[in-house]
Length: 370
Image (cartoon, rainbow, N blue to C red; front, side, top):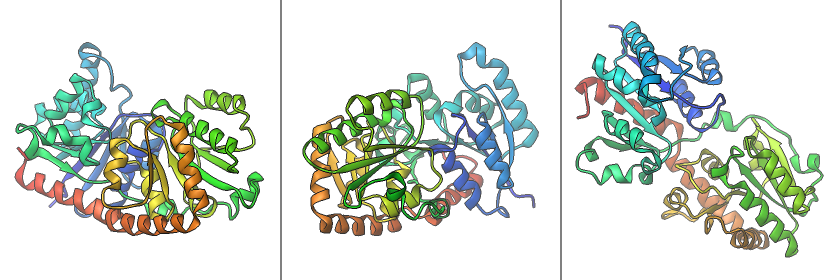
């Protein structure tokens, strides 16, 4: 008997970051004797990486726009699905749904929608499309809380938390990134990992570094990532006189080595997240975290003391948190141990793949989760 085909549909930027990596983790982990896999996406980087894993990939360039602009592309998507006859569609991101939901309904194919941002952050159009999905998977409870509370959708909601890709995390890097950057031996080193975009709020972290240095703490920041706000962040760094202590690292494949060998703490000032992979990776490596007190970070902290929370947007309190952990190495070590144990219990890749495998099998047996 031919194995059922699962189509992964993804609309996003042309890079490999959070949601793209989650697709690739499933492609790598799912049993190819149990499923056939196909990726349909707009991003060439994701298509290339999918093919490198031996998964067939099809590019659909246009996913956005209104009903009229989408009409020809809905026809294209329907043609792709009709040609390949999938048993299940995994829509990775709600922005894929304007093409996926109409086509899947025409062809009676069940859809799993995988939410990497809160349902409440979506506009009305995408919320309606999410609600039309057969199963809605959130990466954390806060992502799907509204849907969980609604009797019309509650039974179709699941939470499958992200996982740490240990192989990717183990990419080799510099044995001494501090020496390479000229950071003094006794300095306290914070690392931030994430796209240089508004919702990551790196400007708050940079300002906190400036405040902490004014108060006498020799602290440096390794800022790993790139994005549309890089120029503004560099200007802010120079304006604050922090050119020697803020290190723009760009996109790195060796983030694991930077965290494990070069960092005392991971810092994130993000004002919007779901379940950030950078925090999971830091915890996995035993690196304590200072994070903004948004819903995602507070949910991760329940019952586990893996670091400190600071009010979102509050650079002054963040600076104080840096000083607290810089002054207390034993506390940092204890936080790191707790973080490591928590991550390895909750964020393993085996668990992540097994939970999606169980969900797929449930849908393929029942035909629908409704």
